Each structure stands twice: as C-alpha cells, then as structure tokens.
Amino acid sequence: MPLRFELDDLTRPEVIRLLEEHLEDMYAASPAESVHALDVGALKVPGIAFWSAWDDTELVGCGALKSLGEGDLELKSMRTTVAARGRGVATALLRHLIAQSREAEGRRILLETGSDDFHAPARRLYSRNGFSECPPFGSYVLDPNSVFFELSL
Image 1 (cartoon, helix red, strand yellow):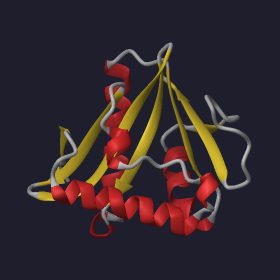
Image 2: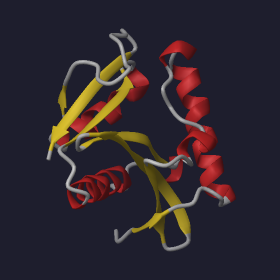
Image 3: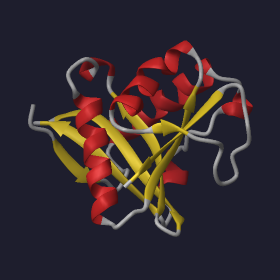
C-alpha cells in the first residue's frame, strides 16, 4: 500500500481527533502518572516534527520525532486509526520515521510504551523493526507500566 506522509501542522480536524483518541486510550490503559502521550499543544513546540500518514484521502496514522539533543530522537504519538490496523500502516509509518531520523543524522531513536496487554502489538512492532529494550532515558524513571526501547541508527 503506497502511503503519503505529510509533515503536518496539526490543524486538520481528523488529525486532532486521532490524537484525542490516542490520549483517551492511553488514559484508559494506564494510570495517569504513567501516561506520557502528548496532546496537540505539546506536539506543536519547536524540536518536535509530526507526520500524518494518508491512504489517498484517508488519514491512517501519525507519529512524531522529538529532538532530545546529541543526535537522540524520541518517538512520540505513534498511532494508527482503528480502520487501518492490520494493513501494514504501523510498519510503514515506523519505517518512514526511522528514515527521517537517519536523514536528520540522528544517532538513535528512543521511545516509551506501555507494559500492558493493550500495548503488546506496539512492543512487537518495535522489536520486529530492530528496537531493543533499554533503561529509562531523559526524565523517565523506572515504572512497572512502562517499557523503554532504543534503536541505534
């Protein structure tokens, strides 16, 4: 499936809705203190690049890269629509974000995701694409509700 990836300004209603659904799911799956997903306002800051993924005119996913400095990038807000699940969208989106990281001469990509069953497909996706578990990074702390991954570029 050929997807179109757009560096997004976070103003389209369908993109905002997808991010709102993402936050709702994160708060439903994890205790509030373990939710590290960003809302639209927090994604609109310098140092974060956000992409939307489209299949023709249908929004199918999104993801962001946050610069942590020294060549480290954090993967944020990785999400596919319910209708797009099982169609390879998440893999294509992740590979796009990895390519963008390499193009920006990133050193590694880091991420935090949940440790519960809801997040199991995400953990499998990251593992299948070369990410390995790592200790908490940045301001993260050990949390039984979180799993941390890294990919050296």
